Picture 1 (cartoon, rainbow, N blue to C red):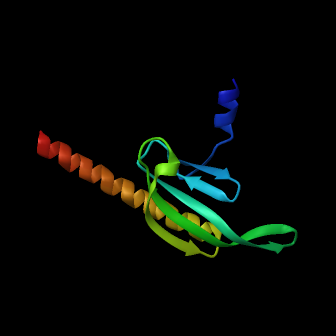
Picture 2 (picture 1 turned 30 degrees about the horizontal axis):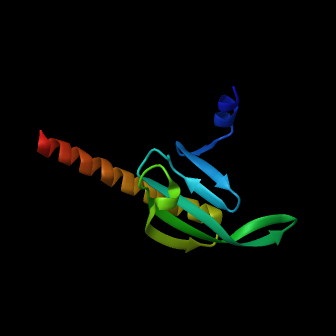
Picture 3 (picture 1 turned 90 degrees about the vertical axis):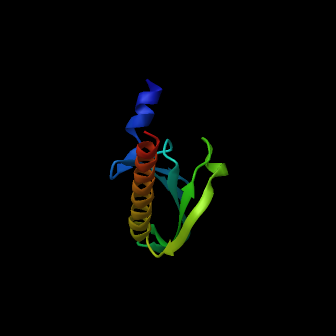
Length: 111
C-alpha cells in the first residue's frame, strides 16, 4: 500500500520520471542506460520564492543499478530550470534513440 502511494507522488515529464533530491533533479527511467542529472547551483529570491539562476546539466551513462558509478557523457549550464530541462530532455531522447538504432542494427547483423 505504501509503495502504491509512493508511485502516485512521482512526477512524470514527457513520459519519464522527474525526481528531486534537494537541489538535484534526476530525469529519466533508472532502468535505462542513460539518465540526466540537473543540479541547481545558484538561486535568487523573487517575492519570497527561490528561483534557479544557474543549473548544471549532466547526461550520465549508468553502469549497473547505482547512480554513483555513472559516467559523465555531456555537461552544460543554463540560467533556468526550464532551459536545463529542455536540454536534458533533448539529450536523453537523442541518446536513447541512437542506442535503440544501434541495438536494432546489431540484432539484424547477428540474425
